[in-house]
Length: 328
Ligand code: G3H
Ligand code: 13P
Ligand code: NA
Ligand code: ZN
Image (tube, rainbow, N blue to C red):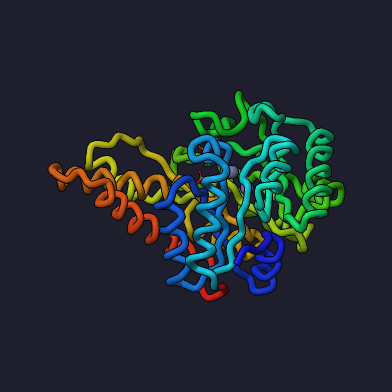
């Protein structure tokens, strides 16, 4: 069944678990996520980014998600729009039937320039008004996602802020989080604590100076009734980097957000955990390995089936670790 983000995260907060929000762009990802949810009896959040809408088209994504709901009617599914850059973008998703939207007013509508507080509040309030009138949930963001090591947004191919950011933007303060929730009434709040999008998050396994679980605790203590969201939460599994690099790939040394740190964050109010990169890595690793081992094979279903298996295993791991399992 299609449910709203608020419904799911309220249940998650009452029962102390977190929910991975997986990005979806194609049929294989959608099936992997649902098969994993079905096996572990987990509720699902799937989210469509601007890049996904450009790649697959919003109607295709919508029907992909509706198809999943039809095939697995016993699994609750949130259809979420990831990183909306304007109220108009969010309005379009509401019209298409999304049950949740993110208004990312931390950046201007170009998706690159950090915005000031008043702009963020104005666009987010507008989206909250029109969404709540339709029973749709809203995620907002305060602070700018980026690396505390380099001051950069991280993703090289166009998602996130451009140029160097300062430390205060990269770490959301409890004061501004509280003020923002009071000013906007968002259902869920994305905060900046040192994570960034993509595979290149940390140059070493993260310690609290570059991935601040302490800041999450502080914010949760201040606004205990707000559902927190952690973007850039891929763990960047070393075993998948190895598979990719052993089969013709070339990905440099890099580290993600360890699952144990996410589990700690879930103990302190993080309810929605955004994951895209890990499914990309698993999918690419599985294809590279299969084609390297089966050079005569040319039926795409053979290697796409391997991507489903690989992504499904990652999803099962996260549903289990985050306590999502058993809550469908
Ligand atoms: O927001 C970041 C997600 O990883 C989506 O990225 O725009 O390349 O689909 P994308
Ligand atoms: P990753 O790049 O860490 O998977 O983050 C995805 C994300 O935050 C989507 O909004
Ligand atoms: Na989002
Ligand atoms: Zn994100």
